[in-house]
Image (cartoon, rainbow, N blue to C red; front, side, top):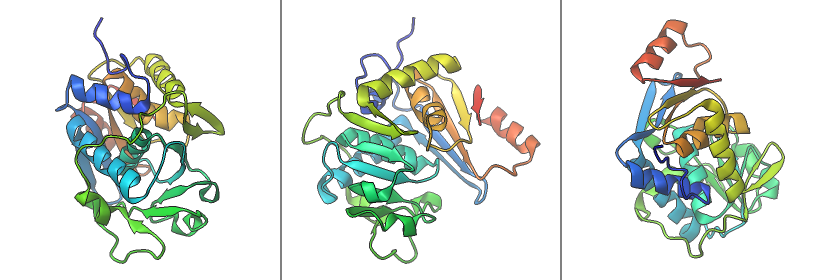
Length: 254
């Protein structure tokens, strides 16, 4: 039986490290925004580089520490996937769609900036513009991710090893440790019938397990990859079928 990146993984960040060791050149996340026409494809190596830079920003510039709670107010987007793995690399507890008032740090897209002001700690804003562009004008009270991340280091080492038994994810009201998250990712991959090299197309949000598991963690655990589609509600069926064919999609969720 072929080994998948799940082998030996104790935390979600370990899943990425295993994928990097297995095949760093393969595509991991392909992103479409059908409102802007944007398409971004990240290999495992490129994705890992972004994760390292983001984790360094969290640990060094934002002083995030293990067990800090992060409210992630972002759509399913290639940068959201990076933030998830970066938070887990530091040992943070990620709350997709969580309450900013209860978080030590909030990461917001342009549509949730007002709600994010309730966070008493650091606030990071993502413009979600094509090519990872900056805000034309920085929102008051926020750090602009696109302006700060390029200068960060390409390698990340946490100040303390990440404990797989500590909280890593709060989703749909349930708190999961890193180890539990990895186990669920593997089970989700099995339920979807994923195998190495498969391609999962997802139109789901990352705010619940169906989208987060099927649209990121299960493919990562199985050695598969994901095609994230945003604003595709009005995409003509023939265009979607063409995308499925051109991206060699084997599974579809949403």
